[in-house]
Image 1 (tube, rainbow, N blue to C red):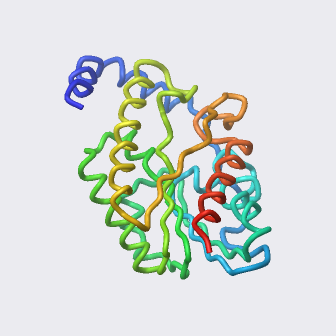
Image 2 (cartoon, one colour):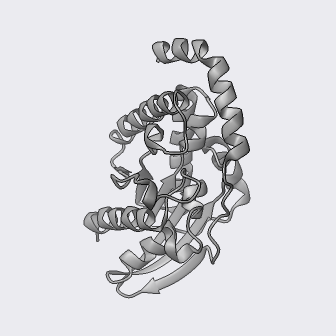
Amino acid sequence: MILDAVIAAGLSPVLLVQAVRLRKRALLLPEAAGLRTGSTGSGTPLRVLIIGDSSAAGVGAEHQDAALAGQLALALAPHRQVTWQLVARTGATTADTFAGLDGIALEPADVAIIVLGVNDVTRGGPLPRWRRTHARLRSTIQQRTGARTLYISQIPPLGRFPLLPHPLRWLLGRRSLRFDTALRGDLAKEPHSRHVLLPDTLDPNDMARDGFHPGPRIYALWAKEMAHRILSDGP
């Protein structure tokens, strides 16, 4: 961590130029269209809350049916009567998601899925503060929804994102790995929490046109893994 800070300080002029250029040329894609609540399937009822950032909101897919929420409902529907609620916003950090919960009517849930961390990594906040805020968020979601299990998605490995130039990609890659490692350690101490890996593919052909968000194929693979974990935990 100290080494990264020293390297970042030495590279700060280069990193600043790269960040400015990246913001100017980045393709801004909309959140997926479609409803953010729904019900489908048959069998034992399962209430699902999905909360998070632009990836949770489906940026990179045209419609929620092809994004995480829709694909997850599709994967669960043969086994459960799924009712789902999506609460997500492009650019959301863990801190402002937590702060905004007071103004959101969260429905009761059996399981909650959290997709956050990328914006915390890219904005440079300290890791200890982020861990505390994430823990408070998890606790609040569980208390307010009654969720028996929380599924927290892996923080994407930014070092493999085609949009990012080096050395910015290298630095954010190390930082995202450090954040995710800490998160995994925290979740291992909570019997009700699960760390869920992302699909092991970041092929540019499978990503969105912006080179930063998942495309429909990645969303589908991600949702299948999430559904597998949920169904494996039962009932």
